[in-house]
Image (tube, rainbow, N blue to C red; front, side):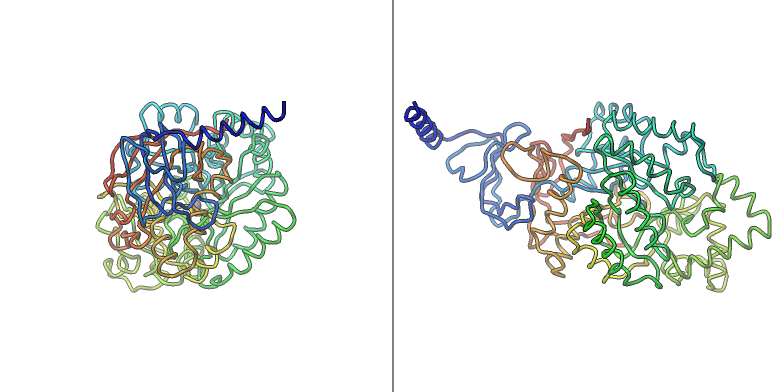
Length: 523
Ligand SMILES: [Zn+2]
């Protein structure tokens, strides 16, 4: 009996190895294949049928509808963007600005803000068609605003229960976890207990928690400790998202934040990070205004400014933030990006605006103009307030993944942060090839396998038979971002082919609007 089984087994192996030339939809030949696990490349062929990788190895002699010669090119799993602002995805559903970076899956709903109700939104997006795979987090600010408006107080028992049931609903609808933006309204009014209670609901459904920390400047270390406390209290994996160190007094402190991460991990907590590869951040100008002054929203802010005593104290708070936090101590470090009420300011700095207004370029006058900008309806700004040393140190940490923190964009739309166009090629071109901050397999792992594992995407993030054919093929000798702070509307170069669920979305560097993405649902 055993001999018979051995014989049948041997025959099977013989038949497999003698199988004639096969036909594939797409065949990628002779590429340096990085499988996404962090190991070095091997030269392999990849056969794709429909949306799946069905064969890897020496596929000499096989035929295909489309053959891509990847000789001397890098072949990697499609990149996963761990922090994506997917707005306005209903208008820009081709997702060209992300796909052309090699991104095949992006995690939306960061910083506490997500579409709501999630299920209806995801359903209509799938019907409309989408250019890459998207997954969503549930935004804490979104849920808190639904239940409590912009109130500066703790929730009642009833309100907390309402928020918990919204999060439960979101998880059942397919979210991958929750996000907070504890620096922003109204999340900034929540205490740690509230976030722990809500995170427990996400944890129950296997979700993660990504935290835009309460502070990234002077209060950074306490904020990292708070995120670790939430991981322990809710028993949930935590990602310190777009991890960075802001403001002159804090530069270099990534040594301490990473030590906090390491010691938490040594105690068994699952703490990770994601990062964008730039020394400037991008957010609303209201980040410079003390949060108590923004409670209740724009109308309440206007009322406070009308009261001279309150206005003075708001101005003092802004001066403090310009000196010690997001202002970097210099009005030239604050650069306008999107200014609906005066578009010619876009690309110019707060210092420039002072001069244009005939004012001395003092910090106090800068603070006065910040108030003016907010009264006009606010503005988005780029803040040049990090140092290279911290960016590199965080990037090299084994628990750091890559996230663009970019929005979907197309040429001509405002003056965005260059990360919206350049994040992934910049890591590969600048930080791997030029700076040697990471090796190529390490960088690819941080953009693929590590991220898929964190999200629980078992069928993506690596190149293996039986997984989805999300693949990027790039030239490691030329890949680079082209978007700059001055000229941000530029696509990267060197990303030659992108396949999403087996369909070519970028072909010889040309973007094809094939919308082969899926709206991914955890449940
Ligand atoms: Zn953020």
